[in-house]
Length: 603
Figure 1 (tube, rainbow, N blue to C red):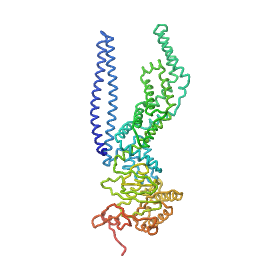
Figure 2: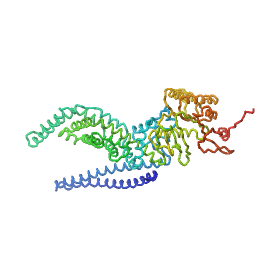
Figure 3: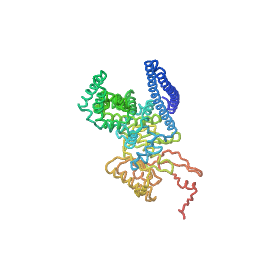
Figure 4: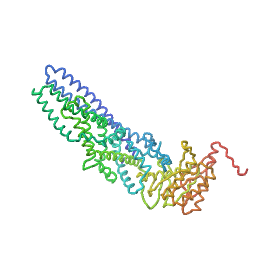
Protein backbone atom coordinates (compact mmCIF):
# COMPACT_ATOMS: atom_id res chain seq x y z
CA UNK A 1 0.00 0.00 0.00
CA UNK A 2 1.20 3.51 -0.80
CA UNK A 3 2.29 5.81 1.99
CA UNK A 4 -0.39 8.41 2.89
CA UNK A 5 1.38 11.39 1.30
CA UNK A 6 2.02 9.42 -1.90
CA UNK A 7 -1.60 8.28 -2.06
CA UNK A 8 -3.09 11.75 -1.52
CA UNK A 9 -0.67 13.35 -4.00
CA UNK A 10 -1.44 10.74 -6.67
CA UNK A 11 -5.18 11.12 -6.02
CA UNK A 12 -4.91 14.90 -6.33
CA UNK A 13 -3.11 14.64 -9.69
CA UNK A 14 -5.61 12.05 -10.92
CA UNK A 15 -8.53 14.27 -9.89
CA UNK A 16 -7.02 17.29 -11.63
CA UNK A 17 -6.84 15.32 -14.86
CA UNK A 18 -10.41 14.10 -14.41
CA UNK A 19 -11.63 17.66 -13.83
CA UNK A 20 -9.93 18.86 -17.01
CA UNK A 21 -11.66 16.12 -19.04
CA UNK A 22 -15.05 16.71 -17.42
CA UNK A 23 -14.90 20.47 -17.95
CA UNK A 24 -14.12 19.96 -21.64
CA UNK A 25 -17.03 17.52 -21.90
CA UNK A 26 -19.31 20.01 -20.16
CA UNK A 27 -18.42 22.75 -22.65
CA UNK A 28 -19.14 20.44 -25.61
CA UNK A 29 -22.47 19.43 -24.09
CA UNK A 30 -23.42 23.08 -23.53
CA UNK A 31 -22.71 23.85 -27.19
CA UNK A 32 -24.74 20.82 -28.30
CA UNK A 33 -27.69 21.94 -26.20
CA UNK A 34 -27.71 25.30 -27.94
CA UNK A 35 -27.26 23.65 -31.34
CA UNK A 36 -30.11 21.16 -30.93
CA UNK A 37 -32.42 23.88 -29.64
CA UNK A 38 -31.67 26.07 -32.67
CA UNK A 39 -32.08 23.12 -35.08
CA UNK A 40 -35.46 22.28 -33.53
CA UNK A 41 -36.67 25.87 -33.89
CA UNK A 42 -35.32 26.22 -37.45
CA UNK A 43 -36.87 22.91 -38.53
CA UNK A 44 -40.22 23.98 -37.17
CA UNK A 45 -40.03 27.44 -38.73
CA UNK A 46 -38.72 26.45 -42.21
CA UNK A 47 -40.76 23.28 -42.78
CA UNK A 48 -44.03 24.04 -41.01
CA UNK A 49 -45.81 25.30 -44.16
CA UNK A 50 -44.54 22.96 -46.89
CA UNK A 51 -44.13 19.88 -44.68
CA UNK A 52 -46.02 20.29 -41.39
CA UNK A 53 -45.75 16.60 -40.42
CA UNK A 54 -42.06 16.49 -41.34
CA UNK A 55 -41.49 19.72 -39.43
CA UNK A 56 -43.15 18.27 -36.34
CA UNK A 57 -41.22 15.00 -36.54
CA UNK A 58 -37.86 16.68 -37.16
CA UNK A 59 -38.45 19.29 -34.47
CA UNK A 60 -39.46 16.57 -31.99
CA UNK A 61 -36.30 14.64 -32.91
CA UNK A 62 -34.04 17.61 -32.14
CA UNK A 63 -35.92 18.40 -28.94
CA UNK A 64 -35.43 14.75 -27.94
CA UNK A 65 -31.71 15.10 -28.54
CA UNK A 66 -31.78 18.34 -26.55
CA UNK A 67 -33.38 16.57 -23.57
CA UNK A 68 -30.90 13.69 -23.85
CA UNK A 69 -27.90 16.05 -23.90
CA UNK A 70 -29.36 18.16 -21.09
CA UNK A 71 -29.52 15.07 -18.88
CA UNK A 72 -25.99 14.10 -19.81
CA UNK A 73 -24.84 17.65 -19.08
CA UNK A 74 -26.55 17.54 -15.67
CA UNK A 75 -24.77 14.26 -14.94
CA UNK A 76 -21.43 15.77 -15.99
CA UNK A 77 -21.99 18.76 -13.72
CA UNK A 78 -22.62 16.42 -10.79
CA UNK A 79 -19.39 14.57 -11.60
CA UNK A 80 -17.53 17.90 -11.64
CA UNK A 81 -18.93 18.77 -8.21
CA UNK A 82 -17.82 15.40 -6.86
CA UNK A 83 -14.36 15.74 -8.42
CA UNK A 84 -13.91 19.22 -6.96
CA UNK A 85 -14.93 17.95 -3.53
CA UNK A 86 -12.57 14.97 -3.82
CA UNK A 87 -9.74 17.31 -4.79
CA UNK A 88 -10.56 19.52 -1.80
CA UNK A 89 -10.36 16.52 0.55
CA UNK A 90 -6.96 15.46 -0.80
CA UNK A 91 -5.64 19.01 -0.37
CA UNK A 92 -6.85 19.02 3.24
CA UNK A 93 -5.22 15.65 3.93
CA UNK A 94 -1.90 16.76 2.43
CA UNK A 95 -1.97 19.86 4.65
CA UNK A 96 -2.79 17.64 7.63
CA UNK A 97 0.22 15.47 6.84
CA UNK A 98 2.30 18.65 7.28
CA UNK A 99 0.64 19.40 10.62
CA UNK A 100 -1.91 21.96 9.37
CA UNK A 101 -5.44 21.02 10.54
CA UNK A 102 -7.17 24.40 10.21
CA UNK A 103 -9.52 23.11 7.48
CA UNK A 104 -11.09 20.64 9.90
CA UNK A 105 -13.71 21.56 12.51
CA UNK A 106 -12.05 21.91 15.92
CA UNK A 107 -15.05 20.79 17.98
CA UNK A 108 -14.78 23.71 20.43
CA UNK A 109 -18.58 23.76 20.71
CA UNK A 110 -18.36 20.33 22.38
CA UNK A 111 -15.98 21.52 25.12
CA UNK A 112 -17.15 21.43 28.72
CA UNK A 113 -14.43 22.88 30.95
CA UNK A 114 -15.81 20.90 33.87
CA UNK A 115 -15.21 17.61 32.07
CA UNK A 116 -12.80 15.32 33.98
CA UNK A 117 -10.04 15.62 31.34
CA UNK A 118 -11.20 17.25 28.06
CA UNK A 119 -9.89 20.74 28.87
CA UNK A 120 -6.56 19.54 30.27
CA UNK A 121 -5.78 17.16 27.40
CA UNK A 122 -6.80 19.51 24.56
CA UNK A 123 -9.51 17.18 23.32
CA UNK A 124 -11.26 20.15 21.65
CA UNK A 125 -10.05 23.44 20.17
CA UNK A 126 -7.44 24.55 17.67
CA UNK A 127 -4.90 21.80 17.04
CA UNK A 128 -6.86 19.49 19.34
CA UNK A 129 -7.24 15.74 19.24
CA UNK A 130 -10.76 16.14 17.88
CA UNK A 131 -9.54 18.37 15.04
CA UNK A 132 -6.83 15.88 14.12
CA UNK A 133 -9.28 12.98 14.14
CA UNK A 134 -12.43 14.59 12.78
CA UNK A 135 -13.43 13.58 9.24
CA UNK A 136 -17.18 13.64 9.86
CA UNK A 137 -19.46 15.60 7.53
CA UNK A 138 -22.60 15.97 9.63
CA UNK A 139 -23.38 17.65 12.94
CA UNK A 140 -24.63 14.35 14.32
CA UNK A 141 -21.47 12.53 13.23
CA UNK A 142 -19.36 15.25 14.83
CA UNK A 143 -21.31 14.94 18.10
CA UNK A 144 -20.88 11.16 18.09
CA UNK A 145 -17.11 11.50 17.64
CA UNK A 146 -17.00 14.04 20.47
CA UNK A 147 -18.90 11.65 22.72
CA UNK A 148 -16.51 8.82 21.86
CA UNK A 149 -13.56 10.94 23.00
CA UNK A 150 -15.21 12.25 26.17
CA UNK A 151 -16.97 9.04 27.19
CA UNK A 152 -14.79 6.25 25.77
CA UNK A 153 -15.52 2.55 25.99
CA UNK A 154 -14.88 0.71 29.24
CA UNK A 155 -15.50 -2.74 27.75
CA UNK A 156 -12.50 -4.56 26.27
CA UNK A 157 -14.61 -6.57 23.78
CA UNK A 158 -16.17 -3.38 22.39
CA UNK A 159 -12.76 -1.72 22.07
CA UNK A 160 -11.39 -4.71 20.16
CA UNK A 161 -14.41 -4.74 17.84
CA UNK A 162 -13.94 -1.06 17.00
CA UNK A 163 -10.20 -1.62 16.48
CA UNK A 164 -10.95 -4.34 13.92
CA UNK A 165 -13.24 -2.00 12.02
CA UNK A 166 -10.65 0.77 12.09
CA UNK A 167 -7.95 -1.59 10.83
CA UNK A 168 -10.10 -2.89 7.97
CA UNK A 169 -11.26 0.54 6.86
CA UNK A 170 -7.73 1.96 7.01
CA UNK A 171 -6.78 -0.53 4.28
CA UNK A 172 -9.40 1.07 2.00
CA UNK A 173 -8.31 4.74 1.65
CA UNK A 174 -10.09 5.11 -1.69
CA UNK A 175 -13.37 3.85 -0.22
CA UNK A 176 -13.05 6.31 2.67
CA UNK A 177 -12.40 9.23 0.32
CA UNK A 178 -15.36 8.30 -1.89
CA UNK A 179 -17.64 7.97 1.14
CA UNK A 180 -16.54 11.34 2.53
CA UNK A 181 -16.87 13.02 -0.88
CA UNK A 182 -20.55 12.11 -1.20
CA UNK A 183 -21.16 12.95 2.46
CA UNK A 184 -19.59 16.41 2.17
CA UNK A 185 -21.98 17.23 -0.70
CA UNK A 186 -24.97 16.76 1.63
CA UNK A 187 -25.71 20.21 3.04
CA UNK A 188 -26.93 20.69 6.60
CA UNK A 189 -28.41 18.38 9.22
CA UNK A 190 -31.55 20.49 9.70
CA UNK A 191 -33.16 19.18 6.53
CA UNK A 192 -32.37 15.62 7.58
CA UNK A 193 -34.07 16.24 10.91
CA UNK A 194 -37.06 17.73 9.07
CA UNK A 195 -37.23 14.55 7.01
CA UNK A 196 -37.12 12.33 10.11
CA UNK A 197 -39.72 14.51 11.82
CA UNK A 198 -41.99 14.29 8.78
CA UNK A 199 -41.79 10.50 8.79
CA UNK A 200 -43.18 10.54 12.33
CA UNK A 201 -46.21 12.59 11.20
CA UNK A 202 -49.21 10.66 9.89
CA UNK A 203 -51.97 11.72 7.49
CA UNK A 204 -54.48 8.87 7.84
CA UNK A 205 -57.10 10.57 5.62
CA UNK A 206 -55.09 9.48 2.58
CA UNK A 207 -55.17 5.82 3.60
CA UNK A 208 -58.94 5.36 4.04
CA UNK A 209 -61.16 3.34 1.68
CA UNK A 210 -62.99 6.39 0.33
CA UNK A 211 -59.75 7.62 -1.26
CA UNK A 212 -59.05 4.12 -2.52
CA UNK A 213 -62.37 3.97 -4.37
CA UNK A 214 -62.05 7.54 -5.67
CA UNK A 215 -58.64 6.81 -7.15
CA UNK A 216 -60.14 3.92 -9.08
CA UNK A 217 -63.54 5.38 -10.03
CA UNK A 218 -62.77 8.99 -10.97
CA UNK A 219 -59.95 8.32 -13.48
CA UNK A 220 -62.17 5.66 -15.13
CA UNK A 221 -65.08 8.12 -15.26
CA UNK A 222 -62.81 10.83 -16.67
CA UNK A 223 -61.70 8.56 -19.51
CA UNK A 224 -65.36 7.78 -20.27
CA UNK A 225 -66.18 11.53 -20.32
CA UNK A 226 -63.25 12.20 -22.67
CA UNK A 227 -64.47 9.46 -25.02
CA UNK A 228 -68.06 10.78 -24.96
CA UNK A 229 -66.85 14.33 -25.58
CA UNK A 230 -64.72 13.25 -28.56
CA UNK A 231 -67.69 11.28 -29.93
CA UNK A 232 -69.88 14.39 -29.64
CA UNK A 233 -72.32 12.77 -27.20
CA UNK A 234 -71.27 15.14 -24.36
CA UNK A 235 -70.69 18.84 -25.03
CA UNK A 236 -67.33 20.38 -24.30
CA UNK A 237 -68.84 22.82 -21.76
CA UNK A 238 -70.36 19.90 -19.86
CA UNK A 239 -66.98 18.14 -19.89
CA UNK A 240 -65.30 21.28 -18.47
CA UNK A 241 -67.97 21.45 -15.76
CA UNK A 242 -67.33 17.79 -14.91
CA UNK A 243 -63.59 18.42 -14.67
CA UNK A 244 -64.02 21.42 -12.37
CA UNK A 245 -66.52 19.70 -10.08
CA UNK A 246 -64.99 16.23 -9.83
CA UNK A 247 -61.23 15.74 -10.56
CA UNK A 248 -60.24 19.34 -9.79
CA UNK A 249 -62.83 19.70 -7.03
CA UNK A 250 -61.74 16.53 -5.22
CA UNK A 251 -58.07 17.52 -5.53
CA UNK A 252 -58.89 20.98 -4.19
CA UNK A 253 -60.40 19.43 -1.06
CA UNK A 254 -56.97 18.05 -0.14
CA UNK A 255 -54.87 20.79 -1.75
CA UNK A 256 -53.78 22.57 1.45
CA UNK A 257 -52.64 19.35 3.11
CA UNK A 258 -50.83 18.18 -0.02
CA UNK A 259 -49.08 21.54 -0.35
CA UNK A 260 -48.07 21.41 3.32
CA UNK A 261 -46.61 17.93 2.84
CA UNK A 262 -44.76 19.01 -0.28
CA UNK A 263 -43.34 22.09 1.42
CA UNK A 264 -42.17 20.02 4.41
CA UNK A 265 -40.39 17.59 2.18
CA UNK A 266 -38.90 20.37 0.07
CA UNK A 267 -36.74 19.21 -2.79
CA UNK A 268 -35.31 16.23 -0.93
CA UNK A 269 -34.79 14.00 -3.94
CA UNK A 270 -31.15 14.99 -4.50
CA UNK A 271 -30.32 14.64 -0.81
CA UNK A 272 -31.97 11.22 -0.66
CA UNK A 273 -29.96 10.08 -3.67
CA UNK A 274 -26.79 11.02 -1.80
CA UNK A 275 -27.90 9.09 1.27
CA UNK A 276 -28.68 6.17 -1.01
CA UNK A 277 -25.14 6.31 -2.44
CA UNK A 278 -23.62 6.32 1.05
CA UNK A 279 -25.70 3.30 2.05
CA UNK A 280 -24.85 1.58 -1.22
CA UNK A 281 -21.13 2.04 -0.54
CA UNK A 282 -21.60 0.25 2.76
CA UNK A 283 -23.85 -2.48 1.32
CA UNK A 284 -21.78 -3.44 -1.72
CA UNK A 285 -18.37 -3.67 -0.06
CA UNK A 286 -17.20 -7.06 1.22
CA UNK A 287 -16.39 -6.64 4.91
CA UNK A 288 -14.47 -9.02 7.14
CA UNK A 289 -14.50 -7.29 10.53
CA UNK A 290 -17.40 -7.80 12.92
CA UNK A 291 -17.83 -4.02 13.31
CA UNK A 292 -18.27 -3.31 9.60
CA UNK A 293 -20.43 -6.40 9.06
CA UNK A 294 -22.65 -5.17 11.87
CA UNK A 295 -23.05 -1.79 10.18
CA UNK A 296 -23.80 -3.52 6.89
CA UNK A 297 -26.39 -5.78 8.50
CA UNK A 298 -28.07 -2.72 10.04
CA UNK A 299 -28.80 -1.40 6.55
CA UNK A 300 -31.14 -4.30 5.77
CA UNK A 301 -34.71 -4.88 6.84
CA UNK A 302 -36.97 -7.73 5.77
CA UNK A 303 -34.42 -8.84 3.20
CA UNK A 304 -34.49 -5.43 1.49
CA UNK A 305 -31.42 -3.20 1.35
CA UNK A 306 -31.61 0.33 2.72
CA UNK A 307 -30.46 1.82 -0.58
CA UNK A 308 -33.40 0.17 -2.37
CA UNK A 309 -35.82 1.46 0.28
CA UNK A 310 -34.42 4.99 0.00
CA UNK A 311 -34.52 4.80 -3.80
CA UNK A 312 -38.22 3.92 -3.71
CA UNK A 313 -38.87 6.98 -1.52
CA UNK A 314 -36.82 9.14 -3.86
CA UNK A 315 -38.92 7.94 -6.79
CA UNK A 316 -42.16 8.89 -4.97
CA UNK A 317 -40.81 12.37 -4.22
CA UNK A 318 -39.79 12.83 -7.85
CA UNK A 319 -43.35 11.97 -8.88
CA UNK A 320 -44.82 14.40 -6.33
CA UNK A 321 -42.60 17.11 -7.82
CA UNK A 322 -44.51 16.81 -11.11
CA UNK A 323 -46.97 19.26 -9.58
CA UNK A 324 -44.31 21.97 -9.82
CA UNK A 325 -45.01 22.08 -13.55
CA UNK A 326 -48.40 23.85 -13.73
CA UNK A 327 -49.60 22.38 -17.03
CA UNK A 328 -48.37 18.85 -16.30
CA UNK A 329 -49.78 19.09 -12.79
CA UNK A 330 -53.26 20.02 -14.00
CA UNK A 331 -53.33 17.30 -16.67
CA UNK A 332 -52.06 14.60 -14.27
CA UNK A 333 -54.58 15.58 -11.58
CA UNK A 334 -57.48 15.65 -14.07
CA UNK A 335 -56.61 12.24 -15.49
CA UNK A 336 -55.29 10.39 -12.40
CA UNK A 337 -55.85 12.52 -9.27
CA UNK A 338 -52.06 12.52 -9.26
CA UNK A 339 -51.34 14.53 -6.09
CA UNK A 340 -53.71 12.45 -3.97
CA UNK A 341 -52.43 9.22 -5.51
CA UNK A 342 -48.77 10.10 -4.77
CA UNK A 343 -49.40 11.30 -1.22
CA UNK A 344 -51.33 8.10 -0.52
CA UNK A 345 -48.39 6.14 -1.93
CA UNK A 346 -46.06 8.14 0.34
CA UNK A 347 -48.23 7.39 3.39
CA UNK A 348 -48.07 3.65 2.76
CA UNK A 349 -44.30 3.92 2.26
CA UNK A 350 -44.00 5.72 5.60
CA UNK A 351 -46.15 3.09 7.29
CA UNK A 352 -43.85 0.35 6.07
CA UNK A 353 -40.41 1.97 6.17
CA UNK A 354 -40.34 5.24 8.15
CA UNK A 355 -39.22 3.57 11.39
CA UNK A 356 -36.16 2.18 9.60
CA UNK A 357 -35.00 5.43 7.98
CA UNK A 358 -33.74 6.98 11.21
CA UNK A 359 -31.73 3.83 11.87
CA UNK A 360 -30.22 3.97 8.38
CA UNK A 361 -29.17 7.59 8.87
CA UNK A 362 -27.75 6.71 12.30
CA UNK A 363 -25.62 3.99 10.68
CA UNK A 364 -24.23 6.61 8.27
CA UNK A 365 -23.26 8.76 11.29
CA UNK A 366 -21.57 5.76 12.94
CA UNK A 367 -19.59 5.07 9.79
CA UNK A 368 -18.53 8.75 9.70
CA UNK A 369 -16.94 8.27 13.11
CA UNK A 370 -15.11 5.07 12.28
CA UNK A 371 -13.94 6.54 8.95
CA UNK A 372 -12.45 9.41 11.00
CA UNK A 373 -10.64 6.91 13.21
CA UNK A 374 -9.46 4.82 10.27
CA UNK A 375 -8.16 7.90 8.43
CA UNK A 376 -6.23 8.82 11.58
CA UNK A 377 -4.61 5.38 11.56
CA UNK A 378 -3.96 5.47 7.81
CA UNK A 379 -2.25 8.85 8.22
CA UNK A 380 -0.13 7.52 11.12
CA UNK A 381 1.01 4.04 10.02
CA UNK A 382 3.70 4.01 12.71
CA UNK A 383 1.14 4.09 15.53
CA UNK A 384 0.31 0.86 17.36
CA UNK A 385 -3.01 -0.65 18.32
CA UNK A 386 -3.22 -1.03 22.10
CA UNK A 387 -4.11 -4.28 23.81
CA UNK A 388 -6.94 -4.19 26.35
CA UNK A 389 -6.01 -6.51 29.21
CA UNK A 390 -6.68 -7.08 32.91
CA UNK A 391 -3.09 -8.14 33.57
CA UNK A 392 -1.72 -4.59 33.92
CA UNK A 393 -3.06 -1.10 34.47
CA UNK A 394 -0.97 0.64 31.80
CA UNK A 395 2.28 -0.51 30.25
CA UNK A 396 3.71 1.24 27.20
CA UNK A 397 7.01 1.41 25.39
CA UNK A 398 8.13 4.50 23.48
CA UNK A 399 4.98 6.46 24.29
CA UNK A 400 4.90 9.94 22.79
CA UNK A 401 2.48 12.82 22.50
CA UNK A 402 0.65 12.61 19.14
CA UNK A 403 0.65 16.41 18.72
CA UNK A 404 4.47 16.57 18.62
CA UNK A 405 6.17 16.01 15.28
CA UNK A 406 7.83 12.60 15.18
CA UNK A 407 11.15 14.21 14.16
CA UNK A 408 11.23 16.22 17.40
CA UNK A 409 9.31 13.96 19.76
CA UNK A 410 11.07 12.15 22.59
CA UNK A 411 9.28 8.96 23.65
CA UNK A 412 9.18 7.48 27.13
CA UNK A 413 7.88 4.34 28.87
CA UNK A 414 4.75 4.11 31.00
CA UNK A 415 4.50 1.40 33.63
CA UNK A 416 1.64 0.77 36.06
CA UNK A 417 1.22 -2.85 37.01
CA UNK A 418 -1.76 -2.58 39.35
CA UNK A 419 -3.94 -0.18 41.33
CA UNK A 420 -2.22 1.59 44.18
CA UNK A 421 0.90 2.69 42.26
CA UNK A 422 1.53 6.42 42.22
CA UNK A 423 4.42 8.22 40.55
CA UNK A 424 5.89 11.56 41.65
CA UNK A 425 7.44 13.33 38.63
CA UNK A 426 9.90 16.09 39.52
CA UNK A 427 11.85 18.42 37.29
CA UNK A 428 12.41 22.02 36.31
CA UNK A 429 10.36 24.31 34.10
CA UNK A 430 9.97 23.10 30.50
CA UNK A 431 11.71 19.82 31.33
CA UNK A 432 8.76 17.73 30.08
CA UNK A 433 6.71 16.89 33.19
CA UNK A 434 3.35 18.23 31.96
CA UNK A 435 3.88 16.83 28.47
CA UNK A 436 4.52 13.41 29.98
CA UNK A 437 1.25 13.54 31.94
CA UNK A 438 -0.62 14.59 28.81
CA UNK A 439 1.12 11.82 26.85
CA UNK A 440 -0.24 9.21 29.27
CA UNK A 441 -3.71 10.76 29.29
CA UNK A 442 -4.24 11.34 25.59
CA UNK A 443 -2.94 7.91 24.61
CA UNK A 444 -5.22 6.33 27.19
CA UNK A 445 -8.22 8.14 25.67
CA UNK A 446 -7.16 7.11 22.18
CA UNK A 447 -6.84 3.51 23.39
CA UNK A 448 -10.24 3.37 25.10
CA UNK A 449 -12.00 4.91 22.09
CA UNK A 450 -10.69 2.22 19.74
CA UNK A 451 -7.90 4.24 18.11
CA UNK A 452 -4.24 3.46 17.58
CA UNK A 453 -1.85 5.14 20.01
CA UNK A 454 1.43 7.00 19.67
CA UNK A 455 3.58 4.27 21.16
CA UNK A 456 5.68 1.26 20.25
CA UNK A 457 3.38 -0.95 22.31
CA UNK A 458 0.54 -0.21 24.70
CA UNK A 459 -1.29 -2.52 27.10
CA UNK A 460 -4.01 -1.15 29.32
CA UNK A 461 -7.04 -1.92 31.42
CA UNK A 462 -10.05 0.32 30.59
CA UNK A 463 -10.46 2.81 33.44
CA UNK A 464 -11.83 6.19 34.47
CA UNK A 465 -9.39 9.04 33.88
CA UNK A 466 -9.44 12.32 35.82
CA UNK A 467 -6.88 15.09 35.35
CA UNK A 468 -5.95 18.37 37.00
CA UNK A 469 -3.33 19.89 34.74
CA UNK A 470 -4.71 23.25 33.65
CA UNK A 471 -6.87 25.55 35.79
CA UNK A 472 -8.72 28.77 34.99
CA UNK A 473 -10.08 31.60 37.09
CA UNK A 474 -13.84 31.94 36.66
CA UNK A 475 -14.78 35.62 36.48
CA UNK A 476 -18.45 34.74 35.97
CA UNK A 477 -18.54 32.82 39.25
CA UNK A 478 -16.05 35.12 41.04
CA UNK A 479 -13.91 32.03 41.58
CA UNK A 480 -10.15 32.12 42.20
CA UNK A 481 -7.69 29.73 40.63
CA UNK A 482 -6.97 28.19 44.03
CA UNK A 483 -10.65 27.66 44.86
CA UNK A 484 -11.40 26.22 41.41
CA UNK A 485 -8.64 23.68 41.92
CA UNK A 486 -9.83 22.84 45.42
CA UNK A 487 -13.31 22.11 44.04
CA UNK A 488 -11.84 19.75 41.49
CA UNK A 489 -9.77 17.95 44.13
CA UNK A 490 -12.83 17.75 46.40
CA UNK A 491 -14.79 16.11 43.58
CA UNK A 492 -12.00 13.59 43.11
CA UNK A 493 -12.00 12.70 46.83
CA UNK A 494 -15.79 12.35 46.87
CA UNK A 495 -15.71 10.01 43.89
CA UNK A 496 -12.98 7.91 45.49
CA UNK A 497 -14.93 7.76 48.76
CA UNK A 498 -17.97 6.51 46.83
CA UNK A 499 -15.90 3.53 45.66
CA UNK A 500 -14.88 4.64 42.15
CA UNK A 501 -11.51 3.62 40.77
CA UNK A 502 -9.85 6.70 39.24
CA UNK A 503 -6.58 7.07 37.37
CA UNK A 504 -5.30 10.55 38.28
CA UNK A 505 -2.92 12.87 36.45
CA UNK A 506 -2.16 15.94 38.58
CA UNK A 507 0.17 18.77 37.63
CA UNK A 508 1.46 21.26 40.20
CA UNK A 509 -1.60 21.03 42.43
CA UNK A 510 -2.55 23.98 44.67
CA UNK A 511 -0.91 26.43 42.26
CA UNK A 512 -2.86 29.35 43.69
CA UNK A 513 -1.28 29.39 47.15
CA UNK A 514 2.16 30.04 48.69
CA UNK A 515 5.00 27.54 48.60
CA UNK A 516 4.70 26.35 52.18
CA UNK A 517 0.94 25.79 51.97
CA UNK A 518 1.41 24.15 48.61
CA UNK A 519 3.97 21.70 50.02
CA UNK A 520 1.84 20.82 53.04
CA UNK A 521 -1.29 20.51 50.92
CA UNK A 522 0.39 18.35 48.30
CA UNK A 523 1.77 15.95 50.90
CA UNK A 524 -1.58 15.72 52.70
CA UNK A 525 -3.46 15.10 49.45
CA UNK A 526 -1.11 12.34 48.32
CA UNK A 527 -1.34 10.60 51.68
CA UNK A 528 -5.14 10.72 51.42
CA UNK A 529 -5.15 9.43 47.84
CA UNK A 530 -3.03 6.46 48.79
CA UNK A 531 -5.69 5.34 51.28
CA UNK A 532 -8.05 4.73 48.35
CA UNK A 533 -5.54 2.57 46.43
CA UNK A 534 -5.80 4.91 43.46
CA UNK A 535 -3.13 5.21 40.78
CA UNK A 536 -1.66 7.95 38.65
CA UNK A 537 1.04 10.59 38.64
CA UNK A 538 1.70 14.01 40.11
CA UNK A 539 4.16 16.41 38.50
CA UNK A 540 5.79 18.97 40.77
CA UNK A 541 8.72 21.35 41.16
CA UNK A 542 8.70 20.67 44.89
CA UNK A 543 11.40 18.10 45.53
CA UNK A 544 10.11 17.55 49.05
CA UNK A 545 7.11 15.70 47.64
CA UNK A 546 9.53 13.06 46.42
CA UNK A 547 10.26 12.28 50.06
CA UNK A 548 6.95 10.43 50.29
CA UNK A 549 8.56 7.50 48.48
CA UNK A 550 10.49 6.77 51.66
CA UNK A 551 7.29 6.90 53.69
CA UNK A 552 5.28 4.74 51.24
CA UNK A 553 7.88 2.73 49.26
CA UNK A 554 5.36 0.09 48.18
CA UNK A 555 3.07 2.69 46.61
CA UNK A 556 5.12 5.71 45.50
CA UNK A 557 7.92 5.78 42.94
CA UNK A 558 10.03 8.83 42.09
CA UNK A 559 10.75 9.75 38.49
CA UNK A 560 12.19 12.92 37.04
CA UNK A 561 13.12 14.91 33.97
CA UNK A 562 16.60 16.29 34.40
CA UNK A 563 18.11 19.48 32.99
CA UNK A 564 21.78 20.05 32.25
CA UNK A 565 22.77 23.64 33.08
CA UNK A 566 25.96 25.36 31.98
CA UNK A 567 26.84 29.02 32.10
CA UNK A 568 25.24 29.81 28.76
CA UNK A 569 22.30 27.49 28.23
CA UNK A 570 19.91 24.85 29.43
CA UNK A 571 19.95 21.40 27.85
CA UNK A 572 16.78 19.26 27.85
CA UNK A 573 16.74 15.64 26.79
CA UNK A 574 13.09 15.02 27.86
CA UNK A 575 13.94 11.48 28.98
CA UNK A 576 12.21 9.99 32.01
CA UNK A 577 14.59 8.83 34.72
CA UNK A 578 14.16 7.19 38.10
CA UNK A 579 14.74 9.31 41.18
CA UNK A 580 14.23 12.94 42.22
CA UNK A 581 15.42 15.80 40.00
CA UNK A 582 18.73 17.42 40.94
CA UNK A 583 18.54 20.59 38.86
CA UNK A 584 15.82 23.23 38.69
CA UNK A 585 15.96 26.14 36.32
CA UNK A 586 13.72 28.98 37.54
CA UNK A 587 16.64 31.11 38.83
CA UNK A 588 18.66 30.53 35.67
CA UNK A 589 15.76 31.59 33.45
CA UNK A 590 15.08 34.71 35.52
CA UNK A 591 18.70 35.78 35.21
CA UNK A 592 18.60 35.20 31.44
CA UNK A 593 15.55 37.49 31.30
CA UNK A 594 17.48 40.24 33.09
CA UNK A 595 15.82 39.79 36.49
CA UNK A 596 18.23 40.19 39.40
CA UNK A 597 18.07 37.26 41.80
CA UNK A 598 19.77 37.71 45.15
CA UNK A 599 20.54 34.95 47.60
CA UNK A 600 19.83 36.54 51.02
CA UNK A 601 20.36 33.45 53.13
CA UNK A 602 23.59 34.92 54.57
CA UNK A 603 22.15 38.39 55.04
